[in-house]
View 1 (cartoon, rainbow, N blue to C red):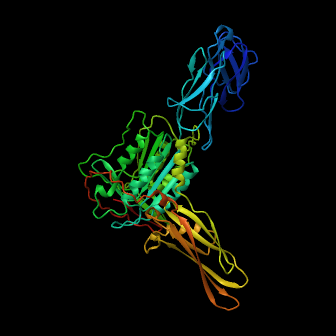
View 2: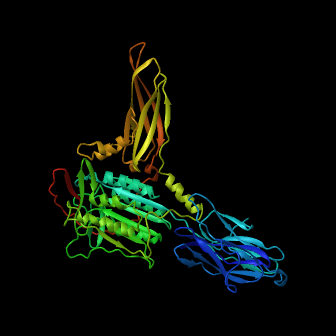
View 3: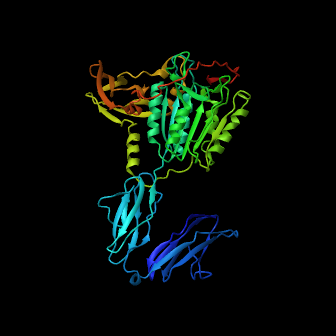
Length: 570
């Protein structure tokens, strides 16, 4: 039996009717019995709610039983009774404001109540500052912070107990680097980032998924991610090349030269420290990348910046390469393969990662790759924990505005002079990969053999269509289309500095003249998805000092008949 809501103490006038409430959960039907401090049992007090007419100050407690002879007691509460005639009329607080748990996007109502002669006046405060015109016993909270209410009349001023309104959220930033300029290309990050993103959305996360970022773009994306952090659960995931040097882990950007140095990479410890500085309820860092120690160097460690601890850290390997597997035409990093297998389970996040550790028993990498898990958590937390917020506050509003910057263009309906109607719709495979679909919806009798073509200005190169690139992107595209007549994939939207204009070319044959005609229309879709975040802007205040380290090389595992694998990164 678990009591999920304890009764609360109140202060009421004499002979005032008051209701004490307790809420509990357990197996089967629960029974209740209320007790007072001077009576063994309260007559009729056998329900979850106890209504009494308060005649004197007294304490109460409730016992909750089930049919299996289990029982628990609620907390003791005091019903304070004051005789107004004897109190000289000074205000007395009967109800203190208490925060509620409400769904994301709804408002929080704070209530307080007091009695006195003459009638008390109310004045609400936030973070020690009075809120103008907030002078009733009910307040619709519009900001996060610490709230209390001053209750006064000509005789005395009293204050309610302060209540804190905290905003929590669940946000994930996923980065997959695979098309490197000067290093071996990878295959797995496409499917790994896509599938993990879908699973995290099922867990209630708002997901930003990005492919093929330069170091400058990675740093800018991480900075945007840090801006979203509050008191919730936040997850950072990376798949691609990486290494360790001098006790620090580094993520290799797609524009890193050969050989690369730390100044060409992103330091994991920097990301970890930034997340901890925001005092999140939980920060999860998952890295599917290689990790080879430099000889004579101390391996990296995870440290908590504060005594409470709040970080969970899962690395695909320790002092070894991480491997990706090609199985049946589908590529996946073997660490992420097992992560996706367990991530939806109802368990503490540390237990989930312990189950992911079975990757070390996989015959494909036995003795070659083993998962490393570290954490500084002081209480159990699960990735399935629901989003909880104490109101639709301005801080939440600002983060939602930031979130809505990554917009998906709306569907467009185009009517050409010949009468043909074409629908242009959009899908986001990733936060920086947009797919535009053109579908011919209506064809007049005088037209035949209609075809439609899409192009963009500026031209956004489809890097995934180059020879030798991953075919997984094409498989994702096929799975998400509804038989369009034409598709156009716009990649690397983080580099976009101006609005995208789609050109829709319609080709058709006129039945009467039997001549081929072309008509064109343009659609301005603005800066879609992550393009609006302007990740191309450089922050000149970062990383003034760097240390150098050259890349490590790795070998390959011999392929089997049905499966091949290579190392993800040195």
